[in-house]
Image 1 (cartoon, rainbow, N blue to C red):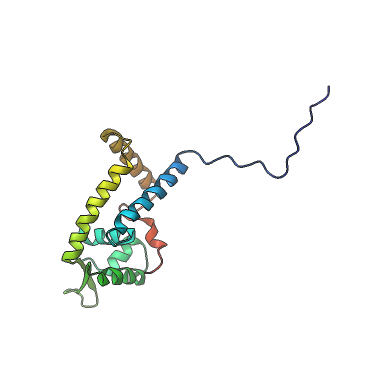
Image 2: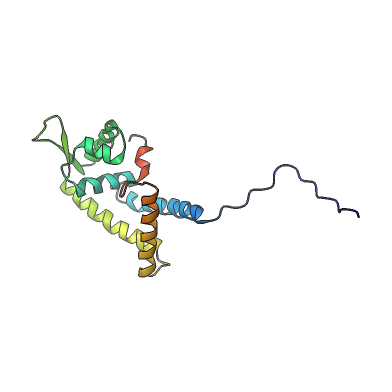
Length: 168
């Protein structure tokens, strides 16, 4: 019995296209990050600025060192990031009354106004991104993503990009 001739191939077979949940998470995450950057860019900010403003607003008076610990970065990186926001008039450093070696971080009035505009932009961003889902589906998706983030050891509310961001 003769076997039919096999087609001649040169090199490895092409890799199958990306698929599955991990790819979709990465694809949607990249898309969402780019769209969010566009929205906050209209406010003169980058996403890292937004995260810092939010963290300072939720705990006014925290020290630069505490902020660095929460972000998982060296304190010198936080100094550079805060210098940038202070230069924009959004954040101010105040000497700590308890320890004059430390600076406490606070939003300025302009920082508070800007964070309000960011909140409105973020809500519009989420609505646009999740337009294909009804409220129950959105809630379910958020719960599943939070569960994955927890299992992966991600710090709630802290974008891992801070560890990779070059100083401004």
